[in-house]
Image (cartoon, rainbow, N blue to C red; front, side, top):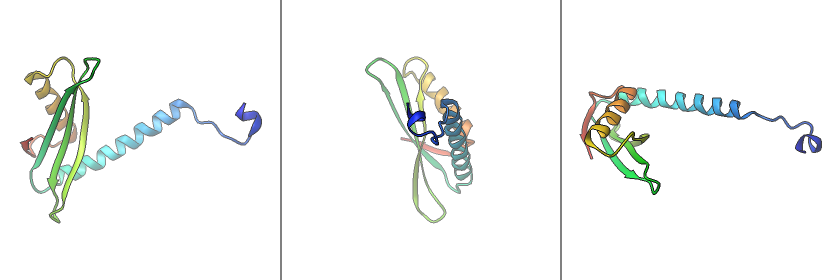
Length: 112
């Protein structure tokens, strides 16, 4: 219908949109990884775990740090779907996986 009314309109496929979003996400993730790896001090993590109304467990991981200009920074690293319950083992696996992905396993100072 739109093509008949406006033949000059170019349609973008769902695959193209998905691919573009994934590329943009990966680019931003690399920028964040580099920023966190180059942080001079330690990084604090804030964890938030909950279960949805339909019984799906989640974990949110937010990083906090002070940069070289003494500016407070924070960013959400992950909104993680947990496999299984909120057990210590499941939480530890998820946290270590995310910290390894960002290359900051040894830079974490405290968990909140």
